[in-house]
Amino acid sequence: MSETPAGLDFIRQRISEDVAAGSRVITRFPPEPNGRLHIGHAKSICLNFGVAAEFGGLCYLRFDDTNPEKENEAFVQAIQEDVRWLGFDWGDHLTHASDYFEQLFQLANQLISANKAFVCGLSAEEMRETRGTLTEPGVNSPSRDLSVAENLALFREMREGKHGDGSYVLRAKIDMSSPNINMRDPVLYRIRHVHHQRTGNDWCIYPTYDYTHCVCDALEEITHSLCTLEFEDHRPLYDWVLDNINLNVHPPQIEFSRLGLEYTVMSKRLLNKLVSEQHVAGWDDPRMPTISGLRRKGVRAPAIRDFCERIGITKQNNTIEMSLFDFCVRKDLEADTHRAMCVLEPLKVVITNWTEDTQGALSAEPLTAPWHPKKDLGRRVLPFSKEIFIERSDFEEVRPRKYKRLSPGEMVRLRMAFIIRCDEVIKDDAGNIQELHCTYFPESRSGSDKSGLKPKGVVHWVSAMEGQYCDVRLYENLFLEKQPDVSELAGALNPASFKQLNAIIEPAALLGDIHHFQFERQGYFVKDETDSSALKTVFNRTVTLRDIRPG
Ligand code: ATP
Ligand code: MG
Image (cartoon, rainbow, N blue to C red; front, side, top):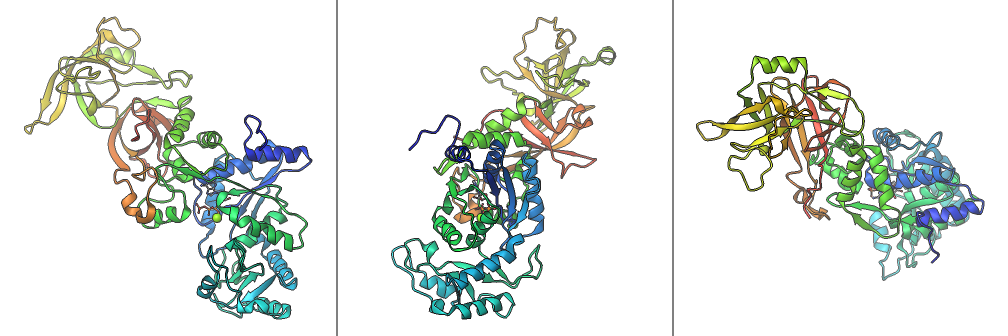
């Protein structure tokens, strides 16, 4: 094997050699519009559009719309939205397999005329039974020896709607004893009397993926047909079709490994099931590995592109750690995301020494804080009042050793504000903590601290008067196991994958047109555009600040 130059995966290596030898670069991303795109598709998108851009070529977005029962126009639109959002542009090169239905039909007639295809009357069941196994050859169809004229006539009748669904198929005439089952007279066309989202009722026969894909690649003069490893066994058929039809173009099919990601599933069949059985709220549920779900969770396109670049392109199938994905998400958000304070599980603190003077002093010189610790995103005002909220988990009545938060008699700094000391814990009759009574130290103001006090730590807080209620949604892994056993989907799901809290957020965070935040000490969050209303803002947690996933 030749050495791959640093930075070039085996596909880019191959393409750069072909380019050096004078080849153009034309690729395609060929989704089936039967679901929304997922992070696995993103890998293929980044590769196909990526190499086209790197080598001065072009990339088609081609919808593989040959299964009208399962496909629809809404998915066609959603896929375009997702590809564009990921940062890729197909320019004028948006196509559909259905654009080529007439050519596919004519080429099939050529195959029949060349005695390379025949119309078969076996039922689906009978075809399964005669296909053979990995160890046994298949059996020739009784229709295999029909004359060319008979086949042409039958195929025309199929196209004209004279026959019912499943009564006939067109099959390639290859070899029923081939060790590769894909070569045992595979089906090229089946009868389906169904409406197609683009061609309406023009057709009642539809070409199969294996026949369609290679022909479309040739018609679009694709120079490198990049697909995932499960198509390796289909390559001989891809080549057979192109060798036996009259198109002087024969793209090479090159396979790479599929992306698998821990704690989730990537097959559209399973994602569809999650949606239809309502295990999730929809294709764009933030727990889904879909592009739309990740976007709604607050992941940005550069993070996904960075992730795809880091995992690289190889021939080894493997499952990538979720922590790598989270790392890319944090890295993207860290540099320019507004900081804000939001108390997820509020505990009330009453500042007992609050006076009119305090009020006056703060009105004259309000507390402010920068939106970002390093990047200049401006500052916001932090209203401070007699009653504030801190996080319930930032108080312990019995102070654990080395505890860095608040407990009776101890001091903490309220971030960007003052030091407080807890003097009294107020409880209800049942003994539940209702509120804390604290003293604040005016001379400890953040930025001009002259108090000399040594607080135990720093906690975030929000003014009870000015703070705003919001819903905060926390998401965990959708599945319990790294490699979920999907034979029993419901049992494999993580019952704690979603939790909603009634939180309190500092007012400035809701004023402007800012969508992504880092809630100090809590993680990255994004406003949920779908479920937020004028009355209440909803935030989705994008990612925690550190890795807290199990093992
Ligand atoms: P699924 O098995 O999830 O239903 P699919 O392959 O049937 O996926 P398509 O819409 O046909 O879905 O996929 C379009 C392209 O995306 C194909 O070229 C396919 O190889 C690629 N692709 C799909 N899943 C992955 C993945 N997990 N990793 C990399 N590429 C993928
Ligand atoms: Mg597919």
